[in-house]
Image (cartoon, rainbow, N blue to C red; front, side, top):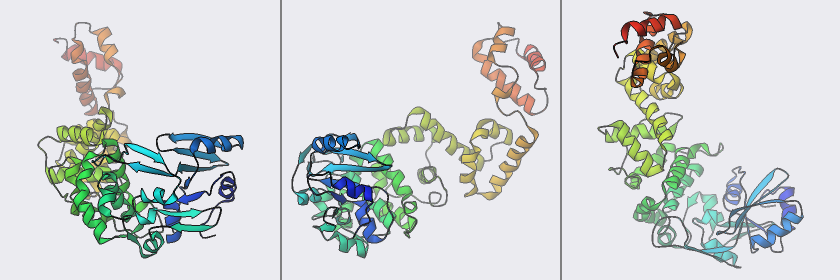
Length: 410
């Protein structure tokens, strides 16, 4: 066999009334000697027809996208995505969303809708042969990424293909063919037409592209330079064409790393406002997600700005496992300073959160009904500070006495 195929997949192919093909990444990677688990299948068979046949023979079928004639086939621990041969029709924008999809019986028409030559190589399971209309095998062996046919046509209505180009280059250590790269420069503006969710998904994949395959040597710094070269950041809503990279290629959490690089590049007046707007508008983050990211990023900068130990850990104690690895790549001295204090808190079991106090808002309400409820949070924060400094014991009796002595005027 040209391509390694499991016995289960060979058995599956026998149920298809037409030849069954593996297409895309699995074939491409096999030719390049790279291990890959995801298998995409295609054939001149309608999904309703094949679903009925396969269900009768014990396969589990799930419709993935009826518009694109796509289903998931599962049996014996193996899963495949199957799509009927089709043609796609796009609007004149870069949204990566066909306005019309038509079934076709012609495998070459199906191949022509794909993006790059190395992703349009078909392997006929039934006949044990490669079907390659666009010389993708040669490009795969020479490690070249080239658009199918005219790069201008391939990239003009799909901003995601620009980002996917960057990702695939990073994953496989490829070189971009000259015309393909030139067209990517011209069409990069289509990225701004993508949905926020799709932008985030593709950016995340790019940020970890060099981690995808263990047996591929990839230069992540080269990918970062390519993003700047394509000026993609302006299509992520940023008022700059290039980012000064310093953290993203050093830290494990590369999304937080790129956010720090963006903040360092832009130096916004208000960190919270910038992150709220950027994460919501460009990536559709919800309020909870935004607050989480803001906590990590602000914890990083507040440490660099020398926030007092007590105030710092009152605010960031539960988040240091995320913040410290970021901080360590910027300043080991500052990280060690805060780490010493953090370990001291752990070692001595110091009270660090208002929830650790042996009184709560209900206790205040029951014992001091004249105190305005709007003051409860401030009172608990005061008590926490006093207990932390050793001025009050963390007992219910002592805490209530302190409230009685200090806050009865509220």
